[in-house]
Image 1 (tube, rainbow over the protein chains, first blue to last red):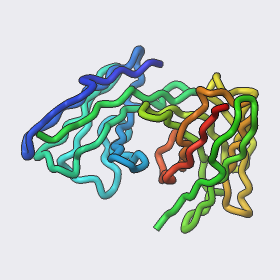
Image 2 (tube, each protein chain N blue to C red; image 1 turned 30 degrees about the vertical axis):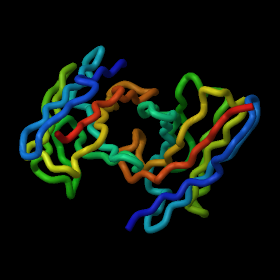
Image 3 (cartoon, rainbow over the protein chains, first blue to last red; image 1 turned 60 degrees about the horizontal axis):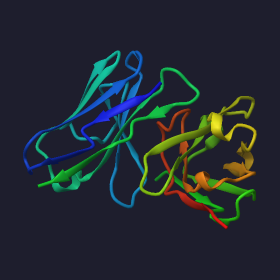
Amino acid sequence: IVMTQSPATLSVSPGERATLSCRASQSVGINLAWYRQRPGQAPRLLIYDASTRVTGIPVRFSGSGSGTDFTLTISGLQSEDLAVYYCQQYYKWPPYTFGQGTKLEIK
Amino acid sequence: EVKLVESGGGLVQPGGSRRLSCVASEFLIRAYWMCWVRQAPGKGLEWVANIKQDGSETYYLDSVKGRFTISRDNAKNTLYLQMSSLRVDDTAVYYCAGGQWGDGDWGQGTLVTVSS
Protein backbone atom coordinates (compact mmCIF):
# COMPACT_ATOMS: atom_id res chain seq x y z
CA ILE A 1 0.00 0.00 0.00
CA VAL A 2 1.46 3.36 -1.06
CA MET A 3 0.92 6.29 1.28
CA THR A 4 1.06 9.78 -0.20
CA GLN A 5 1.27 12.89 1.96
CA SER A 6 0.57 16.45 0.98
CA PRO A 7 1.82 19.06 0.95
CA ALA A 8 5.53 18.25 1.11
CA THR A 9 6.14 21.46 3.07
CA LEU A 10 3.66 23.58 4.98
CA SER A 11 4.38 27.00 6.45
CA VAL A 12 1.96 28.24 9.11
CA SER A 13 1.99 31.17 11.51
CA PRO A 14 1.99 30.66 15.27
CA GLY A 15 -1.50 30.31 16.64
CA GLU A 16 -2.93 29.28 13.28
CA ARG A 17 -4.14 25.85 12.19
CA ALA A 18 -2.13 23.35 10.14
CA THR A 19 -3.88 20.72 8.05
CA LEU A 20 -1.83 17.78 6.79
CA SER A 21 -3.18 15.17 4.40
CA CYS A 22 -2.41 11.52 3.83
CA ARG A 23 -3.86 9.32 1.11
CA ALA A 24 -3.63 5.55 0.81
CA SER A 25 -3.51 3.73 -2.53
CA GLN A 26 -6.23 1.40 -1.25
CA SER A 27 -8.49 1.35 1.77
CA VAL A 28 -6.76 0.90 5.11
CA GLY A 29 -9.91 1.24 7.20
CA ILE A 30 -8.89 3.26 10.23
CA ASN A 31 -5.54 1.50 10.58
CA LEU A 32 -3.63 4.74 10.23
CA ALA A 33 -1.09 6.37 12.53
CA TRP A 34 0.58 9.77 12.65
CA TYR A 35 4.10 10.43 13.91
CA ARG A 36 6.04 13.57 14.64
CA GLN A 37 9.78 13.75 14.13
CA ARG A 38 11.43 16.85 15.51
CA PRO A 39 14.88 17.82 14.16
CA GLY A 40 17.54 15.45 15.42
CA GLN A 41 15.07 13.26 17.29
CA ALA A 42 13.45 9.90 16.83
CA PRO A 43 9.85 9.77 15.62
CA ARG A 44 7.12 9.78 18.20
CA LEU A 45 3.66 8.32 17.77
CA LEU A 46 0.93 10.95 18.07
CA ILE A 47 -2.25 9.28 16.86
CA TYR A 48 -3.35 5.75 16.03
CA ASP A 49 -6.56 4.24 14.68
CA ALA A 50 -6.84 7.43 12.62
CA SER A 51 -8.14 9.58 15.46
CA THR A 52 -7.03 8.26 18.88
CA ARG A 53 -4.44 10.44 20.57
CA VAL A 54 -1.59 8.78 22.42
CA THR A 55 -1.54 9.56 26.14
CA GLY A 56 0.16 12.89 26.74
CA ILE A 57 -0.45 14.32 23.28
CA PRO A 58 -2.29 17.66 23.50
CA VAL A 59 -5.90 17.91 22.34
CA ARG A 60 -4.88 20.46 19.72
CA PHE A 61 -3.63 17.48 17.70
CA SER A 62 -6.55 15.72 16.03
CA GLY A 63 -6.82 13.05 13.39
CA SER A 64 -9.69 12.18 11.12
CA GLY A 65 -10.58 10.08 8.12
CA SER A 66 -11.10 6.51 7.09
CA GLY A 67 -10.63 4.36 4.02
CA THR A 68 -8.13 6.18 1.83
CA ASP A 69 -8.17 9.80 3.00
CA PHE A 70 -6.87 11.06 6.31
CA THR A 71 -6.09 14.38 7.93
CA LEU A 72 -3.96 15.52 10.82
CA THR A 73 -4.99 18.91 12.17
CA ILE A 74 -2.81 20.90 14.54
CA SER A 75 -4.60 23.85 16.11
CA GLY A 76 -2.99 26.80 17.85
CA LEU A 77 0.37 26.16 16.25
CA GLN A 78 3.39 26.55 18.51
CA SER A 79 7.09 26.80 17.73
CA GLU A 80 7.63 23.34 19.22
CA ASP A 81 5.45 21.88 16.46
CA LEU A 82 8.26 22.44 13.97
CA ALA A 83 8.83 18.90 12.70
CA VAL A 84 8.27 16.41 9.94
CA TYR A 85 5.00 14.51 10.25
CA TYR A 86 4.55 11.02 8.86
CA CYS A 87 1.49 8.87 8.35
CA GLN A 88 1.72 5.07 8.42
CA GLN A 89 -0.74 2.32 7.55
CA TYR A 90 -0.88 -0.90 9.52
CA TYR A 91 -3.83 -2.48 7.74
CA LYS A 92 -1.96 -4.67 5.28
CA TRP A 93 1.47 -5.96 6.11
CA PRO A 94 4.28 -6.68 5.66
CA PRO A 95 5.38 -4.10 5.07
CA TYR A 96 3.86 -1.38 7.18
CA THR A 97 4.25 1.63 4.92
CA PHE A 98 4.88 5.27 5.70
CA GLY A 99 4.13 8.37 3.73
CA GLN A 100 7.06 10.48 2.58
CA GLY A 101 6.39 13.10 5.25
CA THR A 102 5.18 16.68 5.51
CA LYS A 103 7.64 19.23 6.81
CA LEU A 104 5.87 21.77 9.00
CA GLU A 105 7.53 25.15 9.16
CA ILE A 106 6.59 27.96 11.51
CA LYS A 107 6.38 31.36 9.83
CA GLU B 1 11.08 6.07 31.98
CA VAL B 2 11.19 3.57 29.15
CA LYS B 3 14.47 3.58 27.32
CA LEU B 4 15.62 1.75 24.19
CA VAL B 5 19.27 2.11 23.30
CA GLU B 6 20.61 0.92 19.97
CA SER B 7 24.24 0.13 19.28
CA GLY B 8 26.37 -1.54 16.65
CA GLY B 9 26.23 1.03 13.91
CA GLY B 10 29.26 2.19 11.99
CA LEU B 11 30.99 2.11 8.64
CA VAL B 12 30.86 -1.17 6.73
CA GLN B 13 31.91 -2.06 3.22
CA PRO B 14 29.41 -3.20 0.61
CA GLY B 15 28.87 -6.93 0.97
CA GLY B 16 29.80 -6.80 4.64
CA SER B 17 27.88 -7.65 7.77
CA ARG B 18 26.85 -5.88 10.93
CA ARG B 19 24.83 -6.76 14.00
CA LEU B 20 22.72 -4.14 15.70
CA SER B 21 21.55 -4.44 19.28
CA CYS B 22 18.80 -2.69 21.16
CA VAL B 23 18.77 -2.89 24.94
CA ALA B 24 15.62 -1.96 26.78
CA SER B 25 15.36 -0.57 30.29
CA GLU B 26 12.27 0.09 32.41
CA PHE B 27 10.50 -2.03 29.80
CA LEU B 28 10.26 -5.81 29.46
CA ILE B 29 10.43 -6.61 25.76
CA ARG B 30 9.16 -10.16 26.34
CA ALA B 31 5.61 -8.82 26.54
CA TYR B 32 5.71 -7.10 23.18
CA TRP B 33 6.27 -7.50 19.49
CA MET B 34 9.36 -5.49 18.56
CA CYS B 35 10.48 -4.03 15.27
CA TRP B 36 13.21 -2.16 13.41
CA VAL B 37 12.57 0.94 11.33
CA ARG B 38 15.20 2.74 9.28
CA GLN B 39 15.68 6.19 7.85
CA ALA B 40 18.14 6.93 5.07
CA PRO B 41 19.92 10.29 5.40
CA GLY B 42 17.48 13.09 4.65
CA LYS B 43 14.75 10.60 3.73
CA GLY B 44 11.58 9.19 5.23
CA LEU B 45 10.87 6.22 7.44
CA GLU B 46 10.90 2.61 6.29
CA TRP B 47 9.73 -0.35 8.39
CA VAL B 48 12.30 -3.15 8.15
CA ALA B 49 11.26 -6.14 10.25
CA ASN B 50 9.37 -7.29 13.30
CA ILE B 51 9.34 -10.25 15.67
CA LYS B 52 6.72 -11.79 17.90
CA GLN B 53 7.09 -11.93 21.68
CA ASP B 54 8.49 -15.47 21.73
CA GLY B 55 10.42 -15.12 18.47
CA SER B 56 8.19 -17.65 16.71
CA GLU B 57 7.17 -15.23 13.95
CA THR B 58 9.26 -12.77 12.01
CA TYR B 59 8.42 -10.59 9.03
CA TYR B 60 10.61 -8.54 6.73
CA LEU B 61 10.63 -5.80 4.14
CA ASP B 62 11.09 -7.53 0.78
CA SER B 63 14.34 -5.72 0.02
CA VAL B 64 16.03 -7.10 3.15
CA LYS B 65 14.52 -10.59 3.15
CA GLY B 66 17.25 -13.21 3.10
CA ARG B 67 19.90 -10.66 4.09
CA PHE B 68 18.65 -9.41 7.48
CA THR B 69 17.62 -11.46 10.49
CA ILE B 70 15.71 -10.06 13.44
CA SER B 71 16.02 -11.90 16.74
CA ARG B 72 15.57 -11.34 20.42
CA ASP B 73 16.92 -12.48 23.76
CA ASN B 74 14.17 -11.84 26.25
CA ALA B 75 16.38 -12.87 29.16
CA LYS B 76 18.77 -10.08 28.21
CA ASN B 77 15.91 -7.72 27.30
CA THR B 78 17.64 -7.18 23.98
CA LEU B 79 16.56 -7.04 20.35
CA TYR B 80 18.96 -7.72 17.48
CA LEU B 81 19.22 -7.12 13.77
CA GLN B 82 21.83 -9.17 11.95
CA MET B 83 22.56 -7.58 8.61
CA SER B 84 24.58 -9.26 5.88
CA SER B 85 25.30 -8.68 2.18
CA LEU B 86 24.95 -5.01 2.95
CA ARG B 87 24.36 -2.60 0.09
CA VAL B 88 24.95 1.11 -0.26
CA ASP B 89 21.19 1.70 -0.13
CA ASP B 90 21.04 0.08 3.33
CA THR B 91 22.76 3.20 4.67
CA ALA B 92 20.41 4.61 7.30
CA VAL B 93 19.73 5.32 10.92
CA TYR B 94 18.21 2.15 12.33
CA TYR B 95 15.66 2.57 15.09
CA CYS B 96 14.31 -0.17 17.30
CA ALA B 97 10.76 0.30 18.47
CA GLY B 98 8.14 -1.46 20.49
CA GLY B 99 5.14 -2.96 18.76
CA GLN B 100 4.48 -4.67 15.47
CA TRP B 101 4.60 -1.46 13.52
CA GLY B 102 6.33 0.98 15.86
CA ASP B 103 3.40 1.92 18.05
CA GLY B 104 5.49 1.69 21.20
CA ASP B 105 8.54 3.57 22.38
CA TRP B 106 11.45 4.22 20.03
CA GLY B 107 15.16 4.38 20.58
CA GLN B 108 17.35 7.20 19.34
CA GLY B 109 18.78 5.12 16.52
CA THR B 110 22.19 3.96 15.34
CA LEU B 111 23.71 4.98 12.02
CA VAL B 112 24.89 2.32 9.60
CA THR B 113 26.92 3.61 6.67
CA VAL B 114 27.63 1.22 3.82
CA SER B 115 30.45 2.58 1.71
CA SER B 116 33.76 1.57 0.21
